[in-house]
Structures are given as C-alpha cells and as structure tokens.
Amino acid sequence: INLWKINPGYGHFRLGYLYSVQGRFVEAAKQYEKCIAEYPDRDNALFNLALVYYQIGYYSSAISLMKEAARKDNYSAQQWLKEHGSDW
Image (cartoon, rainbow, N blue to C red; front, side, top):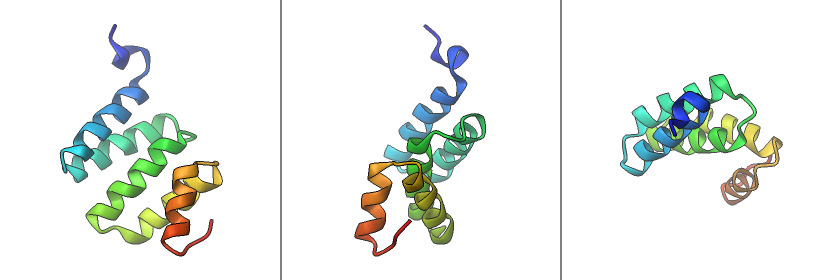
C-alpha cells in the first residue's frame, strides 16, 4: 500500500518525524509544514513542528504553534506549555 498516494499529509508527517529523530530539523520542519498546509487541523503535526522550531531556535514561532496545538486540545502541547511557564 502506498500511503503517500492515499494520504499525502500522512506521508509528510511520517517523513517529518523520521527527519526529527535523526536530528535533521530543517528538513523535518519542511515536511511538517507541508502536512499542515494540507491538513491544518492536525494538532499533532502542529505540536511536532513546534518542537522542531524550538530545536532550530525559532522560539516565538514554536510558542505560537504550541499554543495553537494546545487550543486544539493537544494534551502534549498543553503539558509542554505548562512546563515552560506559559498558558494557551
């Protein structure tokens, strides 16, 4: 089964995850951005992109995306913000 043809957003999400665990954060960000462009309500992609942005040093963008994911009821984003002294 070619998941990329069935759901391209999922392919971008998985590739973003693969790049992020390899420490290839710029490439990961590009894949998560493509996923979000196709599926803007994907809160887990927002959360992962926020983490990648944080790793790259794009702190304000990371916080903004983290808050957006938290407002979409992403528990991990809510916990991350809480641990970093921010609300959503």
